[in-house]
Amino acid sequence: MRIFDPHIHMTSRTTDDYERMAAAGVRAVVEPAFWLGQPRTSAASFTDYFDSLIGWEPFRAGQFGVRHFATIALNPKEANDPRCRPVLDLLPRYLDKDAVVAVGEIGYDSMTPEEDEAFAAQLALAVAYELPALVHTPHRDKARGCERTLAVVAESGIDAGRVVVDHLNEVTVKLVRDSGCWLGFSIYPDTKMTPQRMVELLRAYGTERMLVNSAADWGRSDPLLTRATGEAMLAAGFSDDDVDKVLWRNPVEFYGQSGRLDLSDVEEPTAVDPQTGNSILRGGS
Ligand SMILES: [Zn+2]
Image (cartoon, rainbow, N blue to C red; front, side, top):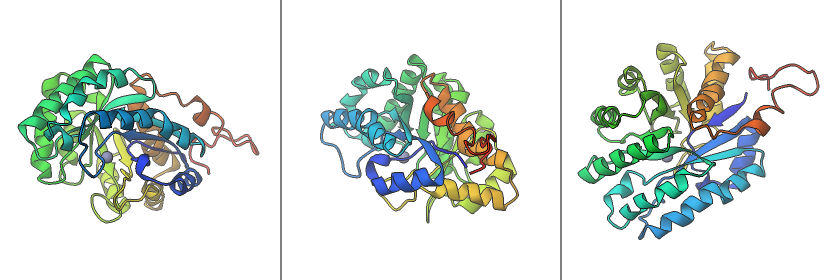
């Protein structure tokens, strides 16, 4: 099983995690910029963080054979802090970098006017830099947050096929499905989605435009829940090809729209089993 985790905060994870992820089949990850758990006190604090997302972290991931990409943005929560807003002016510098495959995480946290502004401004950046956008949906008042998110996305003029709306569940799946955006699901140990609930949604809505991530960060989360979801799919009668589509080809297609997703050295060498010469693209190991 080859796995691309399209949303994980590796900065908060240990090398043990990289080791276990690589052993479980995780070969590539996208790390979205987000908040630190405590407020940043100035825009300068973002530059060191962004630099580590495109420098140190890809290097660290590479030690374990995992390909690392980033998305860059002012996150929704900190859009409300006037000390952080000036970072909007620094984003263009980062959106030019090869390791950056989308603008994100953007969207709503508490749905304030400040968040409105930062969200719209960053969707405009995604359009200007021809990058996809990773959009976080609020954890409270999910249906209303999701509706408003989709309205802002539509208003921005960005192609819906270049947007993933993330942290969806049974309440919000249909709204996003109908919008033409990609659907992101974060599988968590005890909140958000579980592997079993994810399987039910894949049964009901199919595998098109569906992305499954662990969204693992510094909180209680588990970077192996992508793998667990693949196993749950197989146990429920999905084919190896279905699993490969959801856990590999879909994220590759979505972030590939950046034109910057170079997977040459992770995709090719593992495509053929050196022992048998058989293709293992369909998840043979
Ligand atoms: Zn996140």
